[in-house]
Image (cartoon, rainbow, N blue to C red):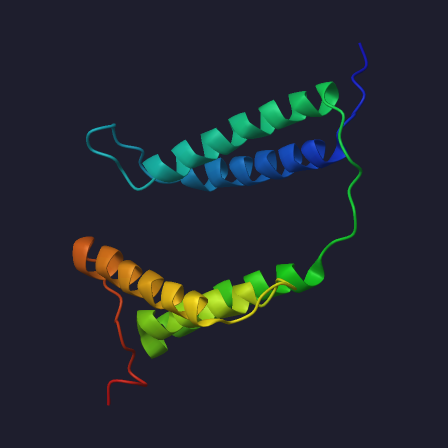
Length: 154
């Protein structure tokens, strides 16, 4: 029986899910899994990877049953802005701190949208988001990230 791909976007989404899931599982199995009550370092990566593989299989099955659109052109501006924001966050978080890094991440990522305009409500939401992230990750969860990096604390 030959299954025709009727939804190319759904098909390629499934391929991406399967690829990331398989790679994550491959690397995650190098770490001890532990048990559900005493999770090892490989437990969560393997769990997330297994979910990605399940989503990938479901997506591939849907690609043969649903009608869908063809894949359009790649939107490079949003792609580069979001990737650039994430990379900037990773490089800067220890140098300039969590507060500045989140501002940079959000503003760079938002710049990828043609509809992006910085207004006072967006700025207020960004400040609230930064405060919430600092409270949750640094204060509540104890993630060892500086709020202000070495560039700003002297």
